[in-house]
Length: 248
Image (tube, rainbow, N blue to C red; front, side, top):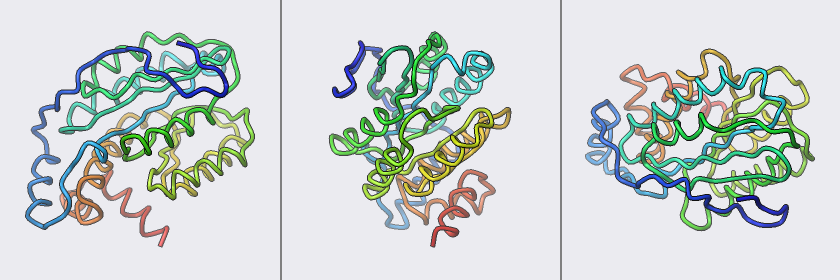
């Protein structure tokens, strides 16, 4: 369903169920440790993540390769018990869609592979405003954004990123390509929201996997949770802990 420039995003009926995912990895073990430490347990608000994609025509030359990386990320989500994802993408003339939150990352990834790039301007402002609405409606742990350029007012985008930061919704921004103006904007958006900026390249799938696990851990048990995972060699946990230390 298309949206107007001033209307909120609509659930487009992608479907999917909300069943909790089965986890056999170290995150499940970590959650039990957190409970013993007296840290807050996982809840739906802290287990929701938005993953937003730029599907405009500028990404077409590398879209197939990017889709493979993005699909790996969605598959990785199945490893983390209770983690719910919402896919948001924009393309074409004023078209911006959201899937609603689902618990089956692989199914969501398969739907993502069917997206076709269309020419149009970036709509990052809509994505950020959608994140703000989701935060106020039901709570979210963070927003992951993957894109290559910015064709909007960077000051407005940074303002919205700051509002998300105040509400404790960090932006995890992955940039494809080397547009310097976009890089400056993306880095500032991530910084002001309390999030992280990364390049979207061949190593992105592993970094996204690590970040998903670390976000799930941090959302459930705070910094103590990350320290538990970091002590076991988890790279995502170390990345977030290093980031938080640099922000202090």
